[in-house]
Amino acid sequence: MLEDIRDIPYLNEEDVLTLNFIRKPCAYIYRRHYRQGLRSHILEVLSPEDVDNEKNGVIIDGAKWYPRAEPLRMLRLFRTRFKDLQEAREEVERVKMIESYLGPNNFAKSEEFLVDYELNGKREILLCGLQEYIKGAILDPWDRLDDSHLTSILRRISFETFEDAEEIGDEWITEVRRKAGEFVTKIKKMILEAYHVPDLAGIGNLLLTREGDIKLVDINNISNVSFDSQVRIDDRGYPVCDKSIESLSLLEQGLLGKPLPEDDFIYRTYLDPGRMEEVKALEKEFLLAIERGTADAEISPS
Image (cartoon, rainbow, N blue to C red; front, side, top):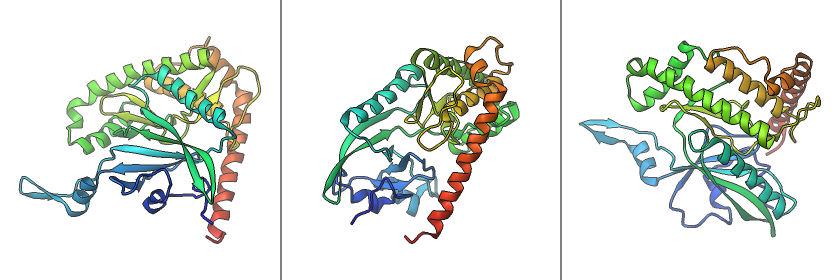
């Protein structure tokens, strides 16, 4: 009996090549990405030539370099189980909502597709995505987001592109803050018009690029937004909607450099002190459950 890939903590290339919907012989190399979500497996789709150069090196101006193979795309295989095709299509429509509100500058474009996943003589619907690879550094809303921190992010990006961070620093920071205002406005528009919000809280879900754009890369965890007093949790027990709106408020304060508007209906609802205490307790409970689950996995037979 083969194990369901939706239940396996990690996938490697051998696991991918056994899947019935992957063409063989394969023209690409699949490598597990360092980031793995609770909701999906993430694999780099690499050129064999680039991987060969990474391993064996190339001669450039008389010196040997070992350039890291840059992904052509990111393959995402989702753990979600759908009861029928209609439910799967609704999930794809939610991703299209992200595209319509954020536009190409603020999310990692993905070609979503549904496949028949064959396992032990049965077929089930599996959602997959081929997503563009975004070069950038993680933007954590809980960081200080002052000029000093943004400069440190720029240095990380510049190291990859061999640019002089000091020369472009002030101009780049100004551009980041301007574009952050556009990003916040788009998310708020999506909340108020479509009553949905993407997951802005997960570490690594937002990247900052050399062009100063904020890019959302986790585009499949989208929460319903309601403006009553009830704190809702997702299927993993996490208050993702509340934490996403809290993240948005931190981005607005930190990157726009001004206090939150007092008359903001979204923040007035979701940043209520009593509500935030309830969210904090739910988040703590979620993290304890994750720790228990990790511990159970470590002692369970493989």
